[in-house]
Length: 390
Image 1 (cartoon, rainbow, N blue to C red):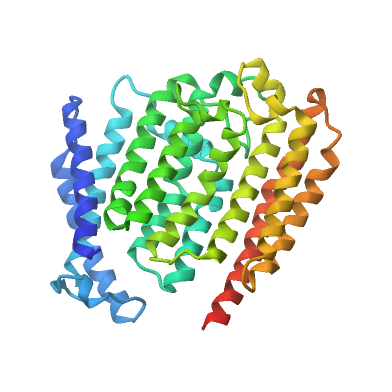
Image 2: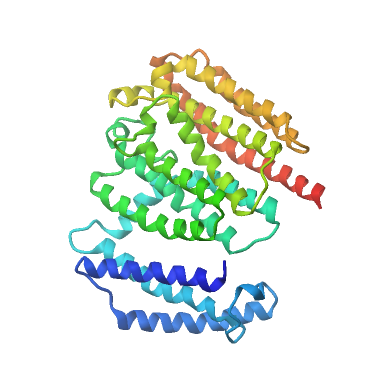
């Protein structure tokens, strides 16, 4: 994908947002936008030229038009123009009379997106692409940013909107595990999800391969289907865990496909292990919510199996993940030990009953931090694989 096409997509998204605002009976101050854009264009010309001249980065000649202002490619100037148009338009849209305050909406959106878990979707995508391409390009940056924030806002934000009746009775809501989203923010948050996701998705679909488009489509469908009414995969026992795991594995598949990877048996084993890990993680996480879910009439793998059987199911799946990694090409088997901390964390809760299921929250909080340790170990193994292949 050329930088010209990429920058044009950002400009198009900005103008579409401005037109949407106009159709809703509001408008932005175009003189103010013009003044802001002019200032940003000057800053872009100066600082891009300085950074390019210092050798901090360069552009692939075949991907740019060749037109420059200073040392900066002409395409670079599309981004400050898009920002000057889109940000005021978005602010006006969210703060128009009768709407909830934008600052408060963004605060709720930040909490709803579970920032402590952003890395769980961005890292698989970025690591998969880097392992194949061994270079940082625009697609990698755009995809990583998408799976870091907008994707998580969609995944968790949609869930918080449609799980309100359960969340208000859930004592663990209100911290790193998500908040309770007031009803006044439900519709604005859904609009924010659309505005934050659609531009990224259009770009990734435009630059992708047939395989990556399938992966991204499956990923997006899984996010929507998990929580939205009518579909509500999260209320279909077992399918809920399968869908949740898809949320985390599909970014890795999309990264590999975008990088043009040729999938082989080793990739299948690795992705299978990751998928088993994700199913186990969701199942075990559902145990702590048995009481509030039943009170709200929400079905889950844990409400169907009961606490004890669900914990056992999670242990089996984490064991399977470790076993699958043992069969992957070197240095993949090293990652099999990553399953052990999860097994140790989960095993003491085998004797939980449905009445005492809330105690699993202690292990779930440890699970959140275990993911960071696992991410570090996976990074080290990837670095070893990179060195071995060089």
